[in-house]
Length: 154
Image 1 (cartoon, rainbow, N blue to C red):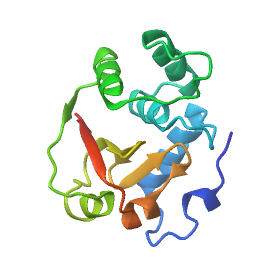
Image 2: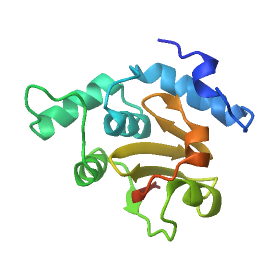
Image 3: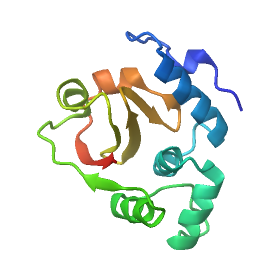
């Protein structure tokens, strides 16, 4: 599934970069189906370079999720699963209360993070925010969602 550019930059104030093109290519390989409540699965798939379907199956086997499960995860399970898959990651302390202020003031543009706000997980990859809908840079610039956890991928 190829994701059109209109999804990536609908009202963007930031112009696409070479890194953004790399992120688009990676997202297209992962097999993301937009509209599902599987942001945690997508973030783990992006970090580990595994297809979303494989990551969902791995999570389902590891943490029994029941018949009606559509992809919901929690912070501690994601962190443990990333560690078990060999990803070097650490929790990061932060001062900002909202995603917008963290993105503007504290985020290191050279690093990769998994950022969780109230009931939503995203990946911050060197200045680009990614969730199950693709690249969501404008969301990060304007969101007043409260930060929950930030995990740095080393």
